[in-house]
Image (cartoon, rainbow over all chains, first blue to last red; front, side, top):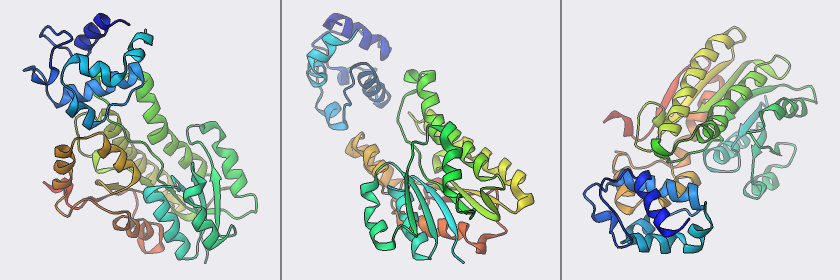
Length: 79
Length: 245
């Protein structure tokens, strides 16, 4: 999976209507709520095997920073 | 007289505390769990003649009857069973696949029914036995992300009521305890996934604070004893007031 595919997958899973890119701060989106955080944790765990903790969500800013938390190599390796 | 008690989930949380309480009142305990290290101190203290640790994976339901054969091979039948093993998970509805749903039902519900089915055979259990399942206050309430957990815990309530009727002719009693949040390793894992504000919110939803295993075990002990001989098919909430709001 490349970064672009990751972004579109993320958008699909979170059912976001806003356009997002690497610089989007997910938590600043009007659509963002605690349910999104829960879905994000589940999606990342299922797809990349990385279990994000509450602190990771707290520290997360942009999509780029989310990718860094997951580990770029895990995203590249995922189908 | 010494009772023979089978306890699952015996190496952690409420299960482990129940094992110790039952040993204190001079019973023989068959402890099913996954981590012997956590129960070694009790084996040392009470000896293998009183506490037998049996490693067993409760998702292997087809092997369960062999376990009962092993336990009763001395000809002495079981008097009680407490099923504490279970799993908790937070999965939003949109991510629940049929496999994931099956996984949590396997451990939380299907193992309960199979344990009860085998236990209730006359060759493995005495009349007047007591069986105790752990549901949860989440079995009667809901929470976001808990479709799987809540539905499994609600299912237990149906198991308890129906089986209590079926087994009444042998005076075997079946009841469920529905705890609120109790300070156990399972809860610690849950809290590690939540931010501080959510953890505080959960704490504040328990008027008497979150529970300790010692707050639940006396009820386990009572429901296993003959003092509760007229109580069956019941769902008993112990939650520090969580569910009354």
